[in-house]
Image 1 (cartoon, rainbow, N blue to C red):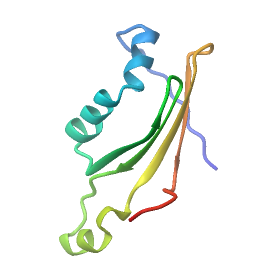
Image 2: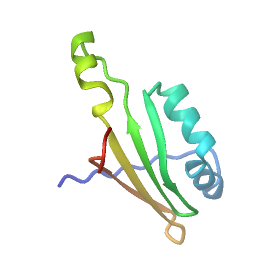
Image 3: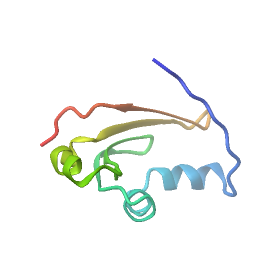
Length: 98
């Protein structure tokens, strides 16, 4: 399994960032409006974790896109460690696609 780590300075407090990262309204605006993903479903969201089903917008030939449909999806499972101010996440294959 590959692991990637990155750091970025953001112009807000950690509390503000974590609140936004776990806010359904923000997530919908980010994934659906800004990133223009096909679909976003909140599977589970709590004070320190979230699970999302994400269907990205793919630039595929129309014929291939019709065949694939929404089957190109992934789940985003993230957990916040507030003491360390650290977010860990992983992308997993969805358990069940229609």
